[in-house]
Length: 327
Image (cartoon, rainbow, N blue to C red; front, side):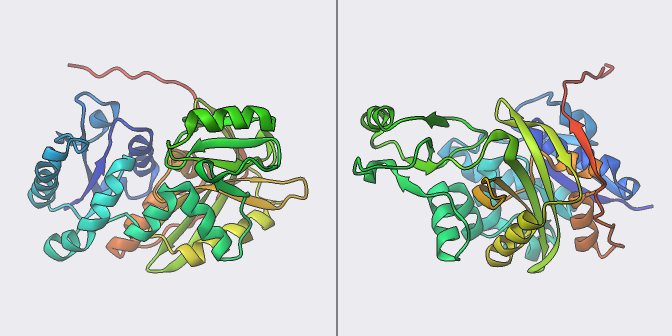
């Protein structure tokens, strides 16, 4: 039986590994061949793929052209039909190549448009997007534009563009904020209202294909070192959040999966603080709950029978694991 070749980038990343493991758990594993690539040798995900390639360093400007050529070479050599992106900094490049890859090779890239990515990558643009569309948003100002007037405390300061909680600080009083204002001026920092508590934090997934809503999942979570270490799906009591993220998705219109991070206030009203316009590090957790969005997108693209997105209540804990790779 002929297999369909799927390319996963970032085989060493949490996202790339989550995509691979979701395919391993799916009902289509025997129908696909996994091709991987990364910027470092011997990534754990590379051993789960039939073939793995090293890519030119995309973060070096003089290597961008070589990187594009390598992607086209891999797609052509293997007749790749789908690409899943496991590294954040590749998103905009693939968004710009998406139409050409589809036209020349019949290869679909699971990536949203440039406008969606730019809105998600910039937390101030995320705030403006929510406000412009009449959706709950934590009050947010650019640190450089703060005039020293009263601001609700506690508040959070964080990079305008960043991920995995890097550079995030909880500020408890105006005096401390004023001091940090002087230290961080000119460094693209935002000041944001602190909504809720860690116990009311959620990571959510919305899935869109051909401009149509296909499903969503809402997980309460706990973080460790910027990543989800615990996730819980209850299957009830989350209607406000589900309705809220559906409204966001219907305006944003991502392609494939989009990760939304939010907290609820004392009344249970949700306030989004981050959009990750891509598959998430919790992608495999979702698959374990019964919400395998990777399998769904592959089946939609290939015209295969669509799997049900029917998560079951439960709790998932992330832990370290080891595997022997025999020489």
